[in-house]
Amino acid sequence: MDGPDEIIHQSLRLRIMAALHAARGGEGVEFNRLRALVGATDGNLGSHLTTLAGAGYVSLEKDFVGKKPRTRASISADGARAFRAHTDYLRGILDSAEG
Amino acid sequence: MDGPDEIIHQSLRLRIMAALHAARGGEGVEFNRLRALVGATDGNLGSHLTTLAGAGYVSLEKDFVGKKPRTRASISADGARAFRAHTDYLRGILDSAEG
DNA sequence: CAGAGAACTCTGTAAGGCAGAGTGGAAGGA
DNA sequence: TCCTTCCACTCTGCCTTACAGAGTTCTCTG
Image (cartoon, rainbow over all chains, first blue to last red; front, side, top):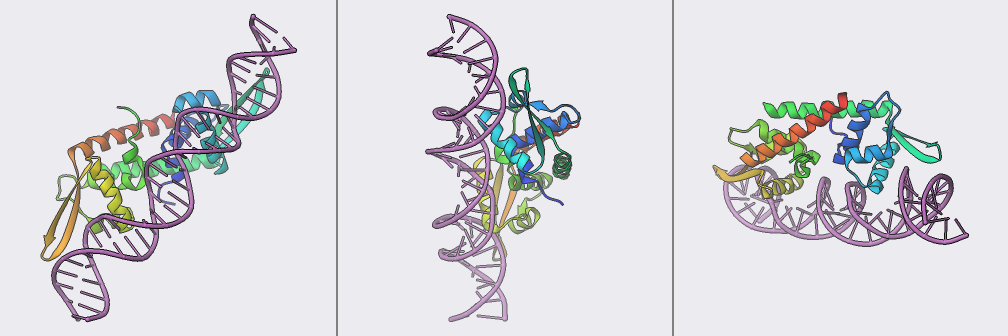
């Protein structure tokens, strides 16, 4: 289980996962807020979320607030595990580079 | 100058840069040793080194040991700066994700 | 002469990333 | 009623890139 998780490593997805991991335990992050946080176009964000959801790393919840549709993304248990494994991997690299 | 350095971020190049940064101040890392360290085929390593050299992040030195050709790669001042900027960026993300 | 080793370069393939356009349903204004 | 807007996508098309593996050049070794 060493080595990088290439799904998470991609730079935009890394930011998405970091944002969702930071918000874990909450009610998820709304699509538009996430888009602003990571700096993506909506089409691009949608497709990365699909990729992450396909890997089982995030779950997407759709509902309505009043009459407006709302999509919230949150990190799954698997996603949190994979994210932590990847951050450990990265820290290992960063630390080894100090040597 | 915030944001990821996409040249460095790519996972194999990140390992290359980390290895070279760890070996900075020395005489450079030999091609074959580097190939083993990062786990690449020789063609792939050669092309990534070309990319990094083109960005001014590494310098390549060729000479002979006895009659055998030897290529050593080392990180440049620019490369070290860029690498540290990128590690700062990554640490920032990792730390923000703990929150 | 055959083979191996170094360090590439080249080729072909396959996979992505991205912006931007299109979609569809609902709300709200003129 | 018509028009626009918003939300959250999906689709299209373009273009870059990563990669393995084959070929290359040079030299020494058996």
